[in-house]
Amino acid sequence: MKLTLYFREYCSLCHQMLAELAPWRQQYGFELDVMDVDADPELERRFNELVPVLMDGEVEICHWHLDAARLAAHLGEIG
Image (cartoon, rainbow, N blue to C red; front, side):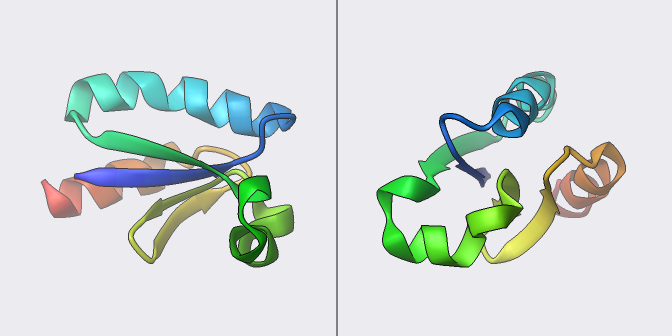
C-alpha cells in the first residue's frame, strides 16, 4: 500500500506529521510518497492551506495533524 503526504518544506506541521508517521510505517509497512505542493501549481491549488494532507489515493485520511484513530481505522479496513 502507498499513502501520499502532501507537504511543504517550510511547514512545521508537515515535518511533525512526517515524523509521527514513521512508527506507523514500521508497524504496517506502507510506502509513503511525500509530495511538495509548491512544486506543482495544481497541487498547490488543490491543497494550499490544508497541508499537511495524508491521502490514500483520492481518500483523505487527515490534514493538519495526524489523526491516529482515523489512520488506524483506515489501515484496519485495508489490512
